[in-house]
Image (cartoon, rainbow, N blue to C red; front, side):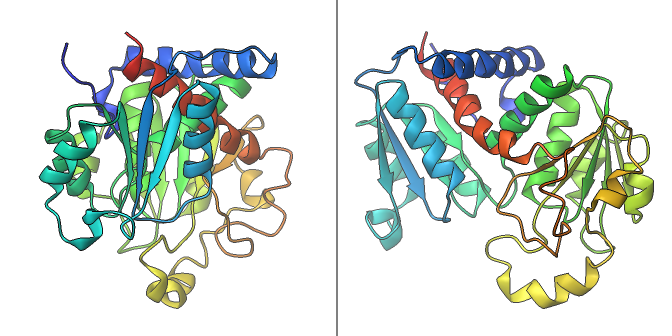
Length: 301
């Protein structure tokens, strides 16, 4: 049986993604009932981190523990990856000793090369280009609060970054319309936009973007590795803050998401996370359940 990897949302079919999202809610209910379900007993996951993390590490580590397995944290300081060993060599060695590998890093090419030489499933837990695990949690959260997202309108406000790219893929895989509001010079990848031009609209107006929207999403203005651009970005993104007054221009039942950590007073107003339309903390918790569903999908045959 061929190995399945999860490097972008497009590695799973639309049907598989919907089943996975619904399974995530089932696993959430199992945990909340206090039932023991350990399909990954004696399985080991290697977690390779080149970028720091709170939600990614806690959710994957807790998920493996709840499934009866074990998660092993590796940083570049702890391995030969940080000392110039070829990715292909590291992939062959690490995958020979564990059952699944999760990688959170800068270069998407690194994850692709690792997967090409791995004998076990590889999960992209974030690269500079994509963040598909977060989208699983976001879709689960929307499904739980509002039902299937098919045919809805989603608005992305902010940088055309890895989250924006994954929302473009989600528009394709989950069949919704995506409006992107970003400043000039911060557009998402033009090839990805062109591939999905029937679903994606780019505008410079947040107000235009949120009109008739069912879900509004944003992210920090300067991602990890862009800290030196912070001041410049603050000026260019000043008109792209999400606030309750901006949300008022969306549909009356629209909800708000943010992958966290959030910078209050920058990409969101001081009060946005506490607004009743915000489902951000449900979204954060769902990282655990969506990733458990993903692990079950990849490892339990």
